[in-house]
Length: 309
Image (cartoon, rainbow, N blue to C red; front, side, top):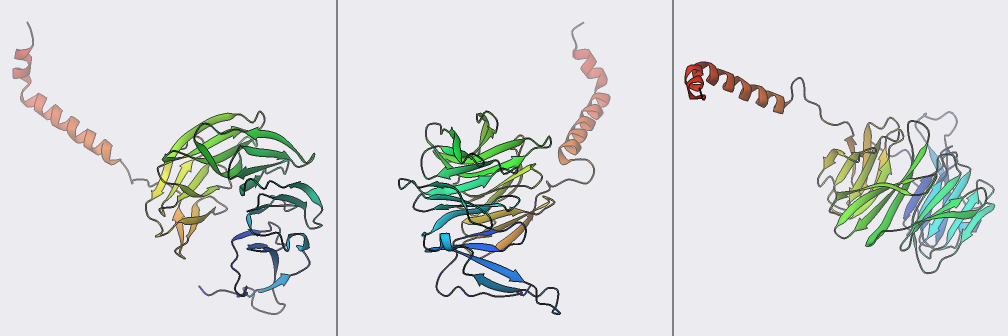
């Protein structure tokens, strides 16, 4: 497929991106700060054509703030959060850019952040220390989620369960294992954890319906797991030749997009392979049972004679 539009960024490479959920633009994080790119569909043109333009005025407060390692809009698009390599957390109302939270921390870098679906909470993972939960109405930190010995937190994602309650998932490395930890979002206590890989986790995503989790590793492999029991549904070893950088589920949760440092993108079905009719193990069991029955019928008298009288 051909791109519908190209926008040059000169010599600067965008490190992180966040798309506004209501179509208000694309936020790009560059080494020296952030820019907003808006898109327009020219009137009278082909419906698939698109024009991108850089909005120089929208992100004045993020113009010279250095590299932002985490950028995200809330689900409704009314809040923007960025976390810097320098440890500075900034949260704004959108589009007015009024400050909600500002938390400088020169000792750590912000690794990841995630909004709850009701826009009440923001969880922030840093390069060291606990995960911190912020109340977006009071602009106060309401919980610190502690690490267990040897854990290094990585990614964080809120997810909505079938009863509309929420759960928080956090990835961590502990020794040689990558694990996923689940947290109660009322008491902010751990409710479960499971080791899921022996490689470092480089990407993480939760499906829109909350039923699936996906991890990507530095070895280029991807795995899809059930969110309730964290059992593996699909695994693709060496799906990419390089580090998996991004994972995103389709809206119906039936497909997973992955991208990598090797400049490849892949779409993987998230549905577990199903056999047509009887499974292989059932067939093997039936054959063994038939052999035993046949042997018994052929040697019935001999077998009965061997029984104690």
